[in-house]
Length: 302
Image (cartoon, rainbow, N blue to C red; front, side, top):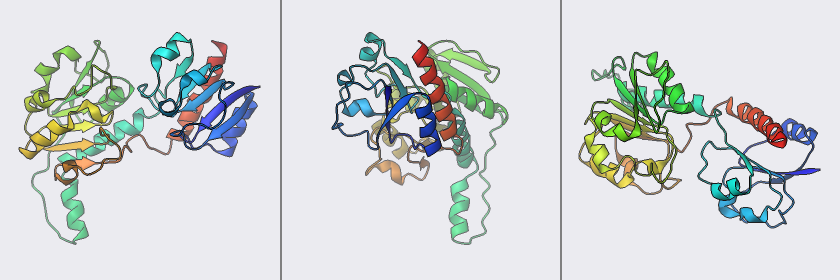
């Protein structure tokens, strides 16, 4: 019988465990994948995890054939080893793109419609109007990294009359884009955009892709939204330009170090901070499990 190692990176129901057993797996479950496993893993055939291989040596998994990640990102696994040993790897493609896109639109609207102003006055039972509300109509939005999340964002922004610009490592086409550019052309686009949305993966090439120079190129009243990885933005440079009064609003769901500790970012009135939560929805669990079982069946046939 094939041995399947599951971790607490996904909250399985009893019915879901039973379904995996019916696929022919012996289940081994580990709640905390962020520790060194205290049992022999040499006969594990399949692993479903997030960051297990940051804390455990993949070379100990002698029979490993399939890895299913609960995350969309691939930076927490040793890809060179995986490819060299012909291990099938699947990420959580498409699972989180809809809730993340909804979160992005929500935060842009909260900034443009001054939601924080009204929330604070409601708590104080104050009836005060705000005349500084902004429309999304005709704004220019740069979506940096036009994958599944970027596509879902563009689809929603077009409904608000936003001029959408997709930027990626290759030219992209979409009914929801007005223009697309290569990432090498980003400098000429940043200075004209009202909204900059980061949905690209973290790599050696994209780390600090939004550095001090790029931040200073942007409009003073621009909005930045980051849902991908914190290290795409140079946080120190971001803090510096925020101190100088830059940006209408910044919405951050991801950070270089998580959880976010003591940081000036907490104290800016134009910064919205959430705890890496944009991917959460009532539909994610079922969507991920369906993808998981599909990929396990697919992986066994490859």
